[in-house]
Image 1 (cartoon, rainbow, N blue to C red):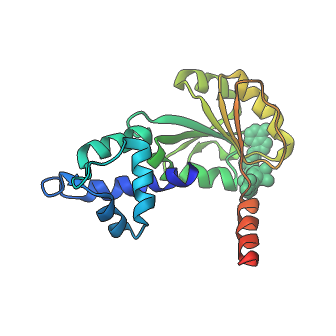
Image 2 (image 1 turned 90 degrees about the vertical axis):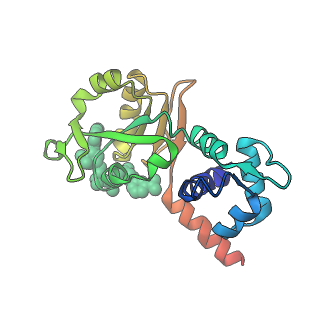
Image 3 (image 1 turned 135 degrees about the vertical axis):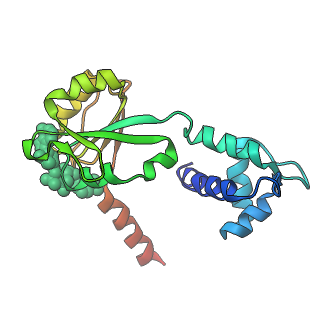
Length: 202
Ligand code: NAD
């Protein structure tokens, strides 16, 4: 599912670039060829989001675009916040690729007064004291933790008290969350190590 999700914005971008007058319908074969992907793969991905294409006709392009936008949540942007506006936090705050998945990182929070203010790319970094007020006013449900490991659990507790229901944790520690709270730990080193392992096994 994660791999399919990774390809959906690619299909969407391609379909949106087509001239609608000339591409009322489109086949998996054409999409696969244009994007350099396997036809079976493309058909499987698209069928999983929109149902099977029609024999000889393929998919109705406008309906496929609409469905991909729905699945990717592009019509209902979910705001997320970052706690810890350091090197990693700032890089994530600046990255605009989250929009492909209907996500916007709207602000970051930090305890370091020197970091408070607007970033050069226009995103606000607020004092941690305003966390509760901001989450309530903006109805924030998703938070990203990029603080040092020693601070992560107390930040996580505070976030769940604020109504956050999904946490993306980068801090290198095991967090405890109440039942019903989604927790995803991220480890870039692990991804690279996985790649290295695959290289070694080739
Ligand atoms: P950094 O020192 O540049 O940034 C940490 C920021 O957190 C600082 O701005 C600091 O003021 C702030 N902070 C500290 N305590 C806080 C608190 N209680 N509340 C709010 N803000 C607080 O560090 P970095 O390189 O950006 O790394 C951040 C975290 O991400 C670390 O835990 C690091 O180990 C982790 N990390 C994980 C990965 C990964 O792949 N999972 C990759 C890089 C870094």
